[in-house]
Image: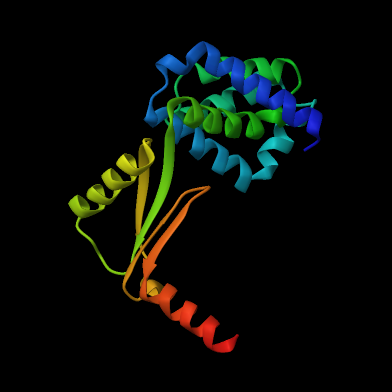
Length: 180
C-alpha cells in the first residue's frame, strides 16, 4: 500500500474512533481483529471491493454480513458505506487494522500470547495476566496456548514485548555460549 493510502486509512480510522470510541467494547475490538484477519487471509475480498462493475449495494451487504458475523458494532456499517461510496473499499483492511491499533493505544490495552509448556489451570493463567497488568499498567487481553518446545516454563509475548522463562531458553543460551 502506498504511503498516501496508509495515511488516508489512518485518517478514516481516527475519524471513526472520534465518533464511536465511547461505545466500543473489547468484544468489538476482537471483532475488528477478526475482520482484519479475514481480509488479510482473503485478499480477493479487497479485489472484489475494488471492482467497479459490481453494484455498491451488493458490496455493502457482503461487508455488512462479514462484520455482523465477526460481532463488530453496527456503527461500522457507516464506515464501510463511506469507504465504498467513495470508491475506497480497498482501504478497508488498513482502516480496520488502524482502528484496532488506535483503540488499543487510546484505551491502554495490550494483547499478550501466554504460552506454557504444559496445561495450566485457567485461574493461574489469569494470575499471570494480572501480573502483567500490574507490571505494565495496561489492561491485558490474552490468549493462552501450550507450547511443549518450551520444555518447562512460559513465554509472555505481545507485539512489542517478550518475556520468556523456560528451560528451552536456558539451553539455547548455554548452547550459544559453548559454540562462541
